[in-house]
Length: 356
Image 1 (tube, rainbow, N blue to C red):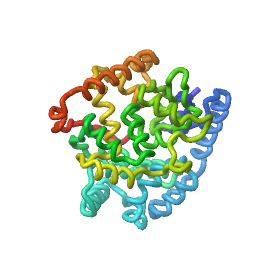
Image 2 (tube, one colour; image 1 turned 90 degrees about the vertical axis):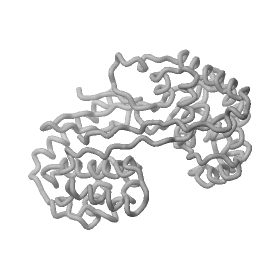
Image 3 (spheres, rainbow, N blue to C red; image 1 turned 180 degrees about the horizontal axis):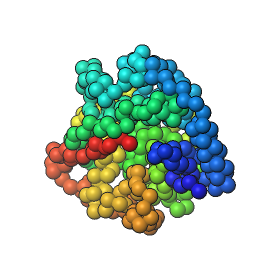
Image 4 (cartoon, rainbow, N blue to C red; image 1 turned 90 degrees about the horizontal axis):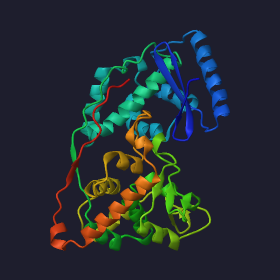
């Protein structure tokens, strides 16, 4: 059997001619997953036996349209395409080479000041679409298969101190203030926070279950709640429905409210995602080891069963959150002048990776 469980969902991994074909079964039921896996193998065999219809002259725009219609498309594929489609839409897929990607990088940098990491995301999606074209026998080989992503440089990301946190919470609108507290006390991503429901809270155990994550490994992780979060959620408690809403309506974006709150608070410029970085930094300050921090934040990890943090259980996570609360209390008792001029912490970005 070629099934592996990622988070709560089984994935079908099949190797054919040295290429790995991965596809989510969309289920946590082993029998349904086995049926899906068998169908996956049959489909790959049928594709292999089908005569090749190589068409390197096809425009990338047409290829991407086919990809949207017939592939396992993720939201970020569509989001990133807004950047690269205008450049590649009319270009024949057989002409998308490593040198062409260099020219694309130069084009993007001329348009706007961007990090290499941002452009790397574009390249990853283009590479993925071209691999799909190889699977569909439209291309004989992916010309970007052995390309390296540009090295992501270290950047300084500001870490919010408790004084700035208090100023921000005082300036933020009520619905945003609750979201900020959640981000600082759980380390959850914005999308995770806005998707959380009251059905996912165990008030008796004081635990919140993450039900939607960017990474498969981050799905269904349990997060012990701080006293502040328990109090906040208890005041808003309902039997069901989204936790964070605006006028009973789902919140799609906090961009405008965030910018307004930062301006009113008169603090340094922070991005919302810096709250997650701040959570991680505070755990470090509180003496929480890396593996526990990764578990709390739902970071991607390998599947080695001997990995330390694959064995981390709820009591250890509770201890980490308790350390975080004690750290925050000490910081609030620290004279304000000591907190006034924090030095931004340098957080390394992901290293360059070899495109498979």
